[in-house]
Image (cartoon, rainbow over all chains, first blue to last red; front, side):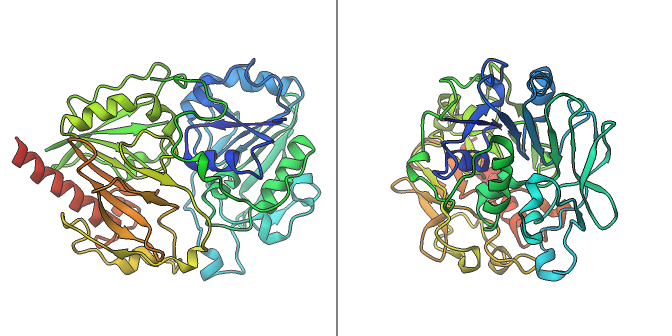
Length: 225
Length: 206
């Protein structure tokens, strides 16, 4: 049974994760233009990945906070805007080549390994590259990761009910792209924390999922067109 | 001057690579509930990297009509849905990126003229295989421009499936990325060669 909704902006890498045989029994593609409280009522958690539709999230933020108020979890990755998330994200140059040029200086310098997502991860698996930092958080938030300049990369709060986990890492999009091959560790740990089930095996691709005229979980007409 | 519709699904940063100039005027076509785009005044529709292929599937007939009327499409993203006429993109992770070597197979329109393929194969930070993902199953008769180590289509020009012109990449971003540090013998040059060809084509067909 699908347990986690992946808020879906029609982006191929998001689709690649949710349709991969390893993850497709757990992840449910929830097309952003079809997001309603009823659509996500049966799910334990939501993931809002990098490359999400920020204006569309703003228009549906009450649904997201209602989900949190029910005690459920939401994980947010990449950028965001204060129009739907009460925090300030700021852009920074993306350094996705540090492992070639300065392998002893990763973009994340400090990680709180008491958090369940990071507890079992090797340092290399908790950090690849980041998309900006947060310069303001909601009150009573817990900082989980910082860069070398002490800027905030990952944080969490329970002030809205369930856990809201936010990071400028981009695990779902990069895992879907499959150019970084160690992200099973992070995504599997995240999945376990979100729903209590741990995916097994390697990330594989189902060729039949490509070139489709119907998208799993998405209504015909797709809320647009 | 070309008139281009840039499909937007709410991602930030699109303006980095698509800024209007003397050669091309962009308008942003924003996906929203009830989306029904009118491409009748456009010469070019751009589906940029990270675009919404669910929404594009929903308007595939609009795209087809636009192409059959002689329009041009640039799809620089992995179209996992069947909205690109005649051609299919398939994701693949069978080979590590360090084994990827792209080479030119054909270039009837000079899209890669002046391009240093070495910079596509190894970026300025020394990383190989960064640009493309998966491969294209091209339409019969389409021109396969760029292939990978295993001979699979990575860039395709299709002038046979419709009445228009399609430039398709296997998910490789394409635009004028000079503002992001790209040099003029890389992707920015491919994109500018593409626009030059479309301008020439527009003059011929006008």
